[in-house]
Image (cartoon, rainbow, N blue to C red; front, side):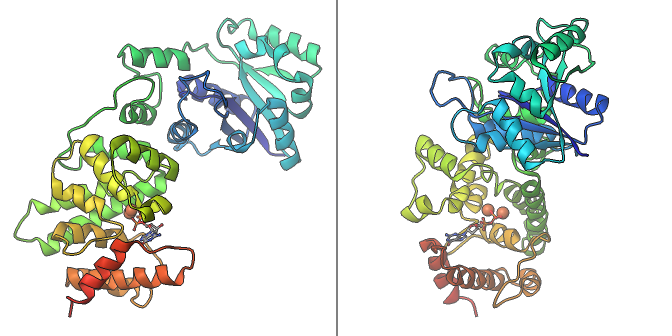
Length: 406
Ligand code: DGI
Ligand code: FE
Ligand code: FE
């Protein structure tokens, strides 16, 4: 029987005590998995310091990404209305009738278990695991588990661990006071908060001139793992295309690499977030972009490259900006990024009329003719896809190169 541990909470933000608690429960009760399940933002604006569900989700994912037995669950986020734990565990029980459920809580929550919504119902569907926390220290936890277990007629067991004095509130205070978070949160979470200026801090502005380990850390802390790997492959492909086509200008190789690394840096935002950010930052959008938000990440990415990553090379920013649609009369660097994004070795789409392998070969011979092949394939793909509206710029670029390349 599969044993599933559930770590519920606001995770505003997720921190090391959460991870240690989840790991201790996992080890001591032989759990197969622990699911991190953030709760929904309260509907009214009375908790202004809770950052968006997207931010909290991304921070959790980046914190648990390396641990195979820690998983993310959006069960509570997806539910409508107030989400009571009693309902959540019932839903889980119905969905996984063969699983044994364990709900992991801090000792302070266990002390106030009586005021939770229908505590008996919670214990009907799961075992509660409680770790020392707040006023409930290591030596008090066992007794409290016994007391609350017999009071609410269920199984409540202690998690043995040293009490760790880290809380989300303390982290928010430290950020407000400009104090370091080293040791409080996993590094990707620290980086994520800095990059987005969460909890009343100013977003951090870096000054990036070339691909460095720091830049890679920033990107891997924000992008989803698959997207990050795509980014690295685009950077490598762009560098080798630059090596092939800009032989005389060696400095173009690191520039192509940097543009490749950053080309999808805005890709972690949802469509809704991108629309909000463009409004906030005064980035103008066409009607097609507003309707097809997948088209916005180039423009927004160029803005982020300039304002967050401090890239002051205009051509790099414009290569990022136009990497999805292309534009007439592109520079060599702009072409390289557009092409690298399409041909990087992780891509495996079935392209028509020009197969990907042919385009890959052509890319190292002529950028212009590879570009036209990609544009032809893209227009073919978008036209054969009824529900995809073609961006005017994609067509304009296609027409421009069609009339030019022999
Ligand atoms: O960001 P990537 O996935 O690496 O690649 P990309 O920047 O080329 O973006 C691909 C997405 O953009 C994909 O969802 C298709 C969409 N797209 C590209 N050109 C057009 C387009 N969508 C519409 N609606 N119209 C276009 O002309
Ligand atoms: Fe892209
Ligand atoms: Fe891409």
